[in-house]
Length: 99
Image 1 (cartoon, rainbow, N blue to C red):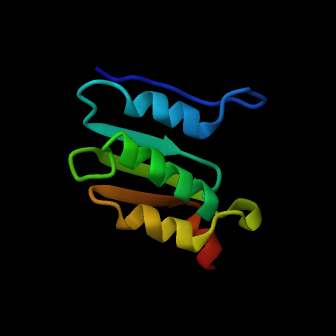
Image 2 (cartoon, rainbow, N blue to C red):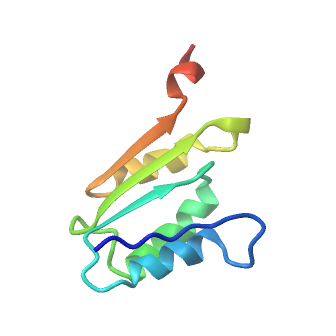
Protein backbone atom coordinates (compact mmCIF):
# COMPACT_ATOMS: atom_id res chain seq x y z
CA UNK A 1 0.00 0.00 0.00
CA UNK A 2 1.32 3.45 -0.89
CA UNK A 3 1.42 6.26 1.63
CA UNK A 4 1.60 9.82 0.39
CA UNK A 5 2.88 12.64 2.54
CA UNK A 6 3.85 16.14 1.52
CA UNK A 7 4.91 19.56 2.74
CA UNK A 8 3.20 22.67 1.42
CA UNK A 9 4.49 26.08 2.43
CA UNK A 10 3.82 27.74 4.79
CA UNK A 11 3.71 24.95 7.36
CA UNK A 12 4.59 24.25 10.96
CA UNK A 13 6.02 20.85 10.02
CA UNK A 14 9.49 20.44 8.55
CA UNK A 15 10.43 18.25 5.61
CA UNK A 16 12.45 16.08 7.98
CA UNK A 17 9.39 15.57 10.20
CA UNK A 18 7.36 14.47 7.17
CA UNK A 19 10.09 12.04 6.09
CA UNK A 20 10.43 10.72 9.65
CA UNK A 21 6.70 9.98 9.83
CA UNK A 22 7.02 7.87 6.68
CA UNK A 23 10.15 6.11 7.94
CA UNK A 24 8.14 4.91 10.96
CA UNK A 25 5.65 3.00 8.82
CA UNK A 26 5.74 -0.75 9.44
CA UNK A 27 7.16 -2.86 6.62
CA UNK A 28 8.54 0.15 4.75
CA UNK A 29 10.22 -1.04 1.56
CA UNK A 30 10.84 2.21 -0.32
CA UNK A 31 10.63 5.98 -0.08
CA UNK A 32 10.50 8.60 -2.82
CA UNK A 33 11.41 12.19 -1.97
CA UNK A 34 11.23 15.28 -4.16
CA UNK A 35 12.86 18.39 -2.68
CA UNK A 36 13.62 21.77 -4.22
CA UNK A 37 17.17 21.68 -2.89
CA UNK A 38 19.47 19.52 -0.76
CA UNK A 39 21.93 20.97 1.77
CA UNK A 40 24.76 19.42 3.71
CA UNK A 41 23.21 20.38 7.07
CA UNK A 42 19.90 18.88 5.97
CA UNK A 43 21.57 15.65 4.88
CA UNK A 44 23.35 15.40 8.23
CA UNK A 45 20.00 15.54 10.04
CA UNK A 46 18.37 13.20 7.53
CA UNK A 47 21.12 10.59 7.92
CA UNK A 48 20.83 10.79 11.69
CA UNK A 49 17.08 10.22 11.48
CA UNK A 50 17.39 7.42 8.93
CA UNK A 51 20.01 5.64 11.03
CA UNK A 52 17.78 5.91 14.10
CA UNK A 53 14.97 4.32 12.08
CA UNK A 54 17.38 1.77 10.56
CA UNK A 55 16.41 2.92 7.05
CA UNK A 56 19.79 3.92 5.65
CA UNK A 57 20.55 0.27 5.02
CA UNK A 58 19.93 -1.56 1.77
CA UNK A 59 16.50 -2.93 2.70
CA UNK A 60 14.74 0.40 2.05
CA UNK A 61 14.80 1.69 -1.52
CA UNK A 62 15.39 5.42 -1.72
CA UNK A 63 14.68 7.67 -4.72
CA UNK A 64 15.48 11.38 -4.60
CA UNK A 65 14.57 14.15 -7.03
CA UNK A 66 15.96 17.66 -6.61
CA UNK A 67 17.26 20.59 -8.65
CA UNK A 68 19.99 23.22 -8.75
CA UNK A 69 17.53 26.14 -8.79
CA UNK A 70 19.00 29.23 -7.14
CA UNK A 71 22.23 27.24 -6.56
CA UNK A 72 21.08 26.05 -3.13
CA UNK A 73 21.74 22.36 -3.69
CA UNK A 74 25.13 21.33 -2.35
CA UNK A 75 27.05 18.76 -4.49
CA UNK A 76 28.49 17.24 -1.30
CA UNK A 77 24.96 16.60 -0.05
CA UNK A 78 24.04 14.98 -3.37
CA UNK A 79 27.07 12.70 -3.09
CA UNK A 80 25.89 11.63 0.38
CA UNK A 81 22.49 10.67 -1.06
CA UNK A 82 24.13 8.82 -3.94
CA UNK A 83 26.41 6.93 -1.55
CA UNK A 84 23.50 5.53 0.48
CA UNK A 85 22.79 1.89 -0.19
CA UNK A 86 19.87 1.27 -2.58
CA UNK A 87 19.58 4.98 -3.39
CA UNK A 88 19.19 6.85 -6.66
CA UNK A 89 19.30 10.60 -7.30
CA UNK A 90 17.79 12.54 -10.19
CA UNK A 91 18.36 16.23 -10.91
CA UNK A 92 15.49 18.08 -12.59
CA UNK A 93 16.83 20.27 -15.36
CA UNK A 94 20.35 18.83 -15.09
CA UNK A 95 20.92 19.10 -18.85
CA UNK A 96 20.19 22.83 -18.79
CA UNK A 97 22.66 23.27 -15.90
CA UNK A 98 25.36 21.43 -17.81
CA UNK A 99 24.85 23.61 -20.87
